[in-house]
Length: 322
Ligand code: NAD
Ligand code: UDP
Image 1 (cartoon, rainbow, N blue to C red):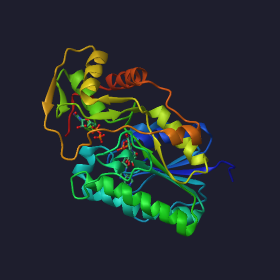
Image 2 (image 1 turned 90 degrees about the vertical axis):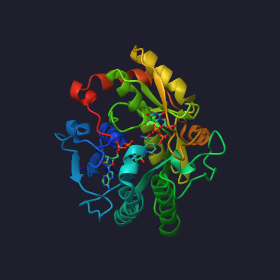
Image 3 (image 1 turned 90 degrees about the horizontal axis):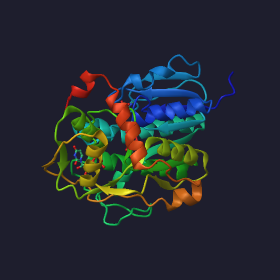
Image 4 (image 1 turned 135 degrees about the vertical axis):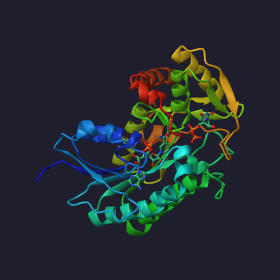
């Protein structure tokens, strides 16, 4: 039998899951990817199918999960992640964060594996403190449209901590702030692919509200490094990982227009319900406990991401299915 450590990655065909698969393959793990392809795309991992240390299961993790053999780690990244996706499939979103997490915690217990869950800055809701430290309890509207995602993720954290406390399971909780990079879906509705897609199609950029709301964007390679370090650390409390470089959405749109060299205008559309007004991670803990901080600035990260999007086939750039 192989000496390789074995890791199960759920959401493997998605944006972050596929980058995680690449990282663990690079570290010489045996990687088992699992995904039901509801928002993912097999093309993100097709380059791994020929490898003997990669396996893929097409499975909905909200249903009982069975994986043969031993497991050292489980990384639970399956979940719709963009507001457009989780508003389209709200029940599945609630189920994958709750039932899916429960199934995977049970699997982790049975296999004596360490489990890391992908939580989110959305658990802070529309935050009243900025930047957000891990101690902040959040400001979430449970019955608002975003509640299906936010509350699923809050439950996910609670049940994970309960398995840690009551069953002694090794668990890690990462709170991910807005992350971008190659393999995002051009039509997933998140602001970066939306703006770049619009610029590439020669359409005006759809700024929601007056664009004064802020976000802090982290390049995917930085995030993956943070996840890797947290998994291998002995820290079981929630940890923020993100880039604290905060920007308004209006300024962000202006940066995209400059980057793409187009002369698009921005138009203002209504701000979605409960859209957080500000978001910026406090990464003091990641710095001191993991020795982690982001290395890729926005200018560099956006350039790489733009090059990825414009290399896509013309029909994909033109196609909008939302
Ligand atoms: P994504 O949509 O690209 O990937 C999610 C993947 O999960 C998809 O491949 C999808 O098909 C799969 N999936 C969804 N439900 C499933 C189910 N029931 N069973 C099996 N597979 C299922 O999104 P992403 O940006 O890669 O996000 C991955 C994870 O990271 C999510 O849990 C998300 O909440 C979290 N996260 C992402 C960000 C970000 O900025 N990208 C920020 C915070 C948290
Ligand atoms: N946004 C926007 N235009 C778009 C898509 C999003 O102005 O076409 C805004 C959105 O209202 C929010 C910010 O950009 O304030 C980030 O939105 P995204 O969906 O990327 O992520 P989230 O709101 O989950 O942080």
